[in-house]
Image (cartoon, rainbow over the protein chains, first blue to last red):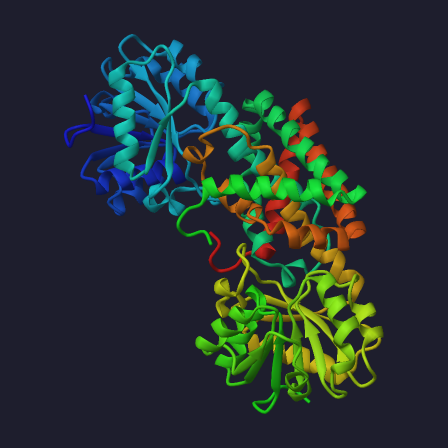
Length: 288
Length: 288
């Protein structure tokens, strides 16, 4: 079964990402419901036509009615939720998530689920520095990458449905990675970059720097505006992979440091040329 | 004397920045000429109406005619040029530059100049990853910061003229910094960020990462596309200041590393909150 207009979708957790999923899927003509802690978020989403209806409690009817349930929760909240309410899920339904790291949740969730309920992990490489449903915006998916992270417990049907979900959101490139490759990739591309931006901002104690800055510093530190509760949890949930990526990056930084210190201009230029060559692969049309 | 429409301006070095100066100043109604090594760059600029006329040799008439001369050259080329041709400059004229680091050029240039010729150092915090006049674009100055870097050898008239130049280009915030503060600032805001981007790109040896990336990695590494000839010269020209900023940043990175390794979530969150708080000062309206 792929997604079709009869597929009923329930979002659990109406924050920035959950809200953006709801908007995107409703806009595509799906019947979307939601379960989230705050009634105000349900009200917000219903008033704006982002969902058909929702509940601030774990409404078993909404769960039973859903063919696909998207969990948009912090990792530990997701685990607690499944532990407490997993038995209420209907066999035949598929669940997916938006969690940024996978090793800490995927197999635990799969083991806790009742027979016949399939969890297929995934997430879009999209987000914003601000959190909360009021910042949700389905344009964040446009042109974004989407990654499906199956295990040996997943079926072709679950994987296909999850890929279809990424396409329906508006994502451009849908990839499949195993859990370990995913977490290594996310450590490098996302977590390490946030570590760098935070470190740079913490090293910034001169006043008035904003009067002198150019766009390179602004672009590099955009993500220094960071949700400390969420990111500290994600860093620790992926500790080993992240520390390895930090080590590798640090070794390159140290090499460049030594080139500058010793005046090794040739090696410095080699590193810059390697950097320039590799960066080309990441260009979007909007890059100069 | 401030800039007025009778001020004749000569650009020496028609690359990305020199060309962008020419376009901006011509658009504002100034009479702009140019001296640059390649005749093809002169032809390009004349054909597009960026300059009135120019020369691929050091034309003494163009120099004598100019009230203000903007040098847009690599630091060592700038020094060589003044050493060889400085005596041709007309007393009463003012010269300025776009060099990203100042300690390596300002006082040497000022000492070499004939009596009556004033060098007032400055530059916009603007640029692009691509070099050459064909990438020049005077929109890079819009909303950019502009920094004037006087020494004790400068006059009020020279400083005022240089500030007026920054405003005429379209820059938003015109600041004044002494040479040492400037070079410390540029080491942190510009050079360190380029070191980080290059190091990160050099640490990136997995294939297909572009299929998984989000915008944070793209934004952070935009400047990893780097002109190795220019930047290696600029790094070495500001070596001591840059190494100090690399040290300070590294200390913060190491602290975050230790927090992740030891599971010190409280301190990690403190760093993230400091980072978030400080980053607010750098917001442009376009930031989320």
